[in-house]
Image (cartoon, rainbow, N blue to C red; front, side, top):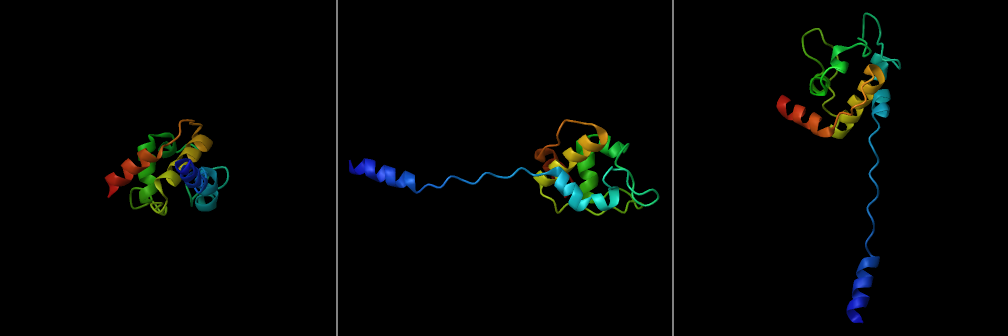
Length: 121
């Protein structure tokens, strides 16, 4: 009886973990990308390149992750680095961009971003 009471007392004090909110790629896009690439992903002609029709967006997810993590490749690229985003955040953002502006439904996963991030360090 004592053992049963102790077990029940211990169980009653366990608090279930709070659910982890899913990362919203669209929310990150609105916060960090919209000002340059616009709502429709067409950018600003002569100033900010479009995401629609971009070979980076439609290409391999690893290449896009590397591009966004570094801020692009080459002296003419003026994009900010997005290496401050977590792997989950960047995967959600890239998944949103690829789905919204290239019609690609396969999500980018955090492990792909992590692998690319480690290769760039």
